Length: 166
Image (cartoon, rainbow, N blue to C red; front, side):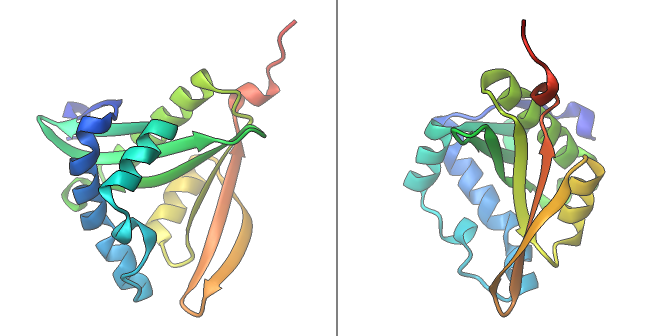
């Protein structure tokens, strides 16, 4: 199923579909932590459009439907922050999240001076943690957000971080 999905850059025209998919995908996270006020569920269309303008965004399409998305920005210190990796519930467990993660890493590394990749997820989000660890990410921090949530930060070096130019 994953091979018929096309990954491409997201643009402003995709924002509304991404926001709807984001709302659907984060329902399970909200339920897991009993918190329906999490930022992905309260983000506005204008805020999402601004995110797309500031950084890199990708979408995965199955025909005309956006079935997955991810966004990233790079800090001046060379840290690429990957966020909101979402896959439609019916498309999960087919490798699409891993494909999107690899593609955003490749594109961000090619377009910026990224030295490392960083992402964050909740401590109970086992599928997310499993995916990130399988892709070489290691936990660097655990910050208790509230009584229900500890945010786990994971990082890995960019392959280009070790390349030097003469």
